[in-house]
Length: 74
Image (tube, rainbow, N blue to C red; front, top):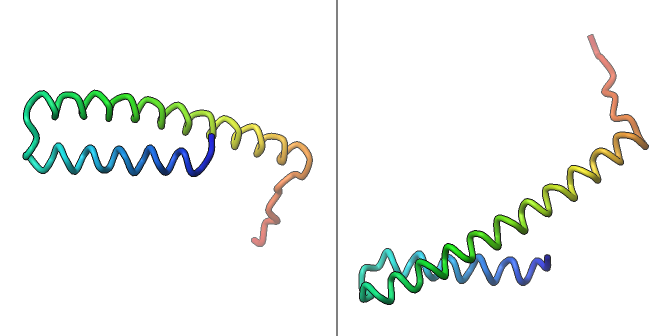
């Protein structure tokens, strides 16, 4: 997942939402853009799940290598 690609997809999704909310689209065009938006949401969600998995693995590895015990100041 590249950050640029993710941002381009987010920007396109925002454009679609604005166009649909604007109310100036014909029904067929609104449906076409809605379908495109749903596809983008699926792609973005998959990319976020992948990133979350990588972060989780990284944190687990970090915790195994360097315990993050916080001293008790009581």
